Image (cartoon, rainbow, N blue to C red; front, side, top):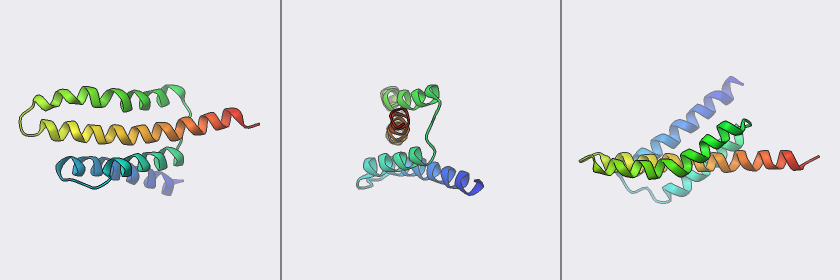
Amino acid sequence: EEHIMNLEKSLMAVMVLLAIVAAVVAVPYSALILLLLGIVSGGMNPVTDILERTAYLIIAVAAPNAADNLDAIPVIGEILNTSIDGIAIAAAGMWVASFTIALINRIKP
């Protein structure tokens, strides 16, 4: 189980690092990669608590809008905004996986 926890932490670190790197330099398909990493992360460790799952949805929807305000900060504002956008994409993937698993668990006998 400790191995799985380390893998989840490593996956989260890769998502954050990719979001930051993609904000600084063009990384082809970075949004798709972040979404897929989020889906894998959410599939490996689905969120069962509806409040926590809702928090991921709120992050996915609201964080990019709130982060748009960071563009007002000279030099680094756009990088911060784009980094948060990338993290929100990964959170969306995590939410989709967790939501899908929860839905399947409610339907199956």
